[in-house]
Amino acid sequence: MPLLSKWLTKTRQARILGQVRGDVLELGCGNGTFYGLCRERIGNYVGVDYSEKVIAEASARFPEARFLKRNLESDELGFEAEFDCVLMIALIEHIFNQGFLLQQCARALRPGGAILLTTPTPFGNDVVHRIGAELGLFHKSAMDDHIVIYNKKRFQTAAREFGLSLGRYETFQLGCNQLAVLEKRAA
Image 1 (cartoon, rainbow, N blue to C red):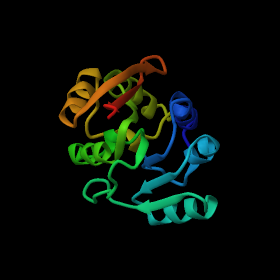
Image 2 (cartoon, rainbow, N blue to C red; image 1 turned 45 degrees about the vertical axis):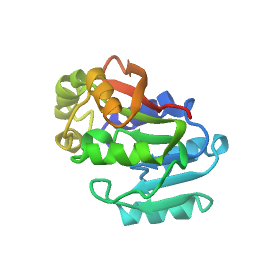
Image 3 (cartoon, rainbow, N blue to C red; image 1 turned 120 degrees about the vertical axis):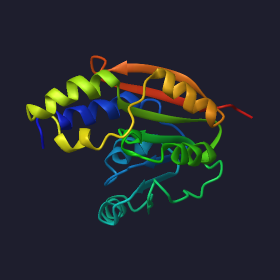
Image 4 (spheres, one colour; image 1 turned 180 degrees about the vertical axis):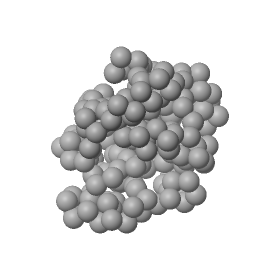
């Protein structure tokens, strides 16, 4: 694993850990690592990933949780107002059909719920990540797979489109990554 990739993952997770609450849906859950960090503080958990292999691994590691295989580009999630928190940690920038996915997330949220997203900033993606990948500090393939890079204005626009609001926005990791919290109005 490239030198800084593991550190970046841990700091992204730490940035949102304190905001995770209630019943949680994590998209791009991988083998359930983030669930392992926060399982004591949440209610029900559903993890979703496209890889059958990692879903099987996560299910074996955490039998008390629920893990589903879905193609986030095209498969409906099938949840209606079931979650307090939807997580997308370093995921949205890898999705072509982002509108479809955000619509599914908004539908899955209970009133008062929030979508927590981390993603590179334009500066982090276009400058720092590119140089770091060339130096072997980050995965080269990760940057190549980035479809759309968000900024604060794009998060505000996306939130409005799906009946949400941008409740919190901040950059971290020296301005290279960002956290956006898209909130659904309480009933």
